[in-house]
Image (tube, rainbow, N blue to C red; front, top):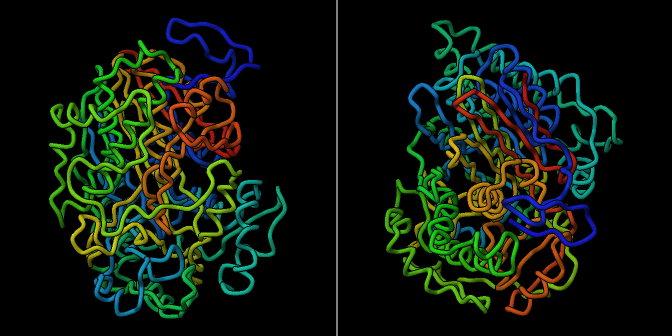
Length: 607
């Protein structure tokens, strides 16, 4: 959707007058399936599963477990993983929730007794029930064909034999090296001394834990599904759950400067059971797009599309100041509704039908000023949490180091995987949480718990209020779509609040501007708004701030600045890691593409 500044060789196409003449890598095509994942070795593992006869769910599970080893600063089995699945058997989209709830002991009253005014981003207090392992098992049981032992085997090998240290992981570990050494000896035992690039990184404890899952599956008897459930129950109702409770009773320091124990108990894990849900979805210009229900931020992309349908983006021009200004202002309105209305539907009424209705979109659309950027946070329904927005007092013109800042605040993003098989099944999954910068590694397991409760709020009247058994409104946001040309598309990216901003540019390129090359659409420079409150500690909003990759056309940025946007320039290849696969029903052609940003993710198509 975005125009690149001069200096690159360009060509004209019917859909765009400024498409780069080359891509960072080709869009990969084949008839045997396609995968993309946040680490190149995980992508290779997924491709191998497809080559050996596994389906998209099998490949996704194998990649997911591998990513828990390969990208421990991005995700882990102590975290969460919402998923969207297209099952060719019933030709329907399904959502695996993959987001764990708050423990029974985590209430607003209890946190007030502990003196908590803001839920910290690290330590033990913000740990939700770990949902990732349950979600992978549920995906495999319902939609897969392999055993758990089969999909675990590559990850076991990576944990036991090791994998080569790579620059992105090494850079993040360097930010938390001192904390590991001084405060978290169980993390230091695995990750220190810091390996050089290409040196072997192992995780023997994680390897042993994965082996124990395979052993419990093998001992269960009763068929494939029974074995998967037995392995799953070993974690949630056996010794691992007890080890988690025991370890979280050791006080650790958090970013608020307090030393606290956790609230998560073995009984919370024993009670937990993930489920498959109906995804949210809308039609947009001949496409059908599916997202998670409003316990995640997924519907915010659907709201953006509903609003944009009233604007002629193609007439404005791909990457024009008019198109980008319109998109940004629409995003501000949709995200304001996210802040006021979204929460776990098991605990609150979310007016999703009205939020996605044409009538509501028409009323909201009228708020877009074509000549001026809004600095207001304007929900159309509901109410913001008490005291919001919390405004960051910073200068948007100053250079930022997102990696350093994120790690200093005790987090390091997310990862992504997508898969399509030759039978017509697709999976989009967004693993996150359980990052090793946020919480010390549990020695018996080789991974830490997550910190997702930081996304809940402490206003008891708000839909996203913290409550026992309630899912915090997560940012994790995989996507599925049926494109106007009939192709099925699975896509997504890491990136917190940007997970429904960068992919929207990608989707609009395909739907509104007629782009056909996945990699070219992913490679295009991106921008995103930081106007809305961050979902992460300390939950600050940055009114009017527009973060842009500096490859964008300078004249377009000048015009956006004239309209009042606070332009914050970033590196040319810094925003996210969008990944995508498609499958065409008519002939079975599969495609795959992955962002080159951060030089880790990769895509593979099979012949």
